[in-house]
Image (cartoon, rainbow, N blue to C red):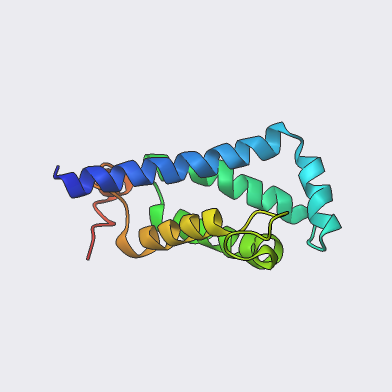
Length: 135
């Protein structure tokens, strides 16, 4: 495995870990509280469960490299939603009282990268299904 594949695997692991931890935090902190907050900003409360599940389960799948492109597309959709509904109003770097969306933008770009590039060489997608190779 070359250095490029090692780097790709590292990014895949970290992206999965970040999303997993965000999903875990939502469930541990009381998903009903998150659902209430979603409702308070005009989003369907049930969407909180969808987002938290995508983050939690998707994070584990991304770490394993299973369903990488689909999971990455779901992550990208979550980040577009976060930027459009919550973070975007404060601008890229924030407005002094609210954080900006620079972190979400990085997660969005990394997610789109995996949609386009596919999983690393160390992934279940490649090992089990012989698919996901870069084209």
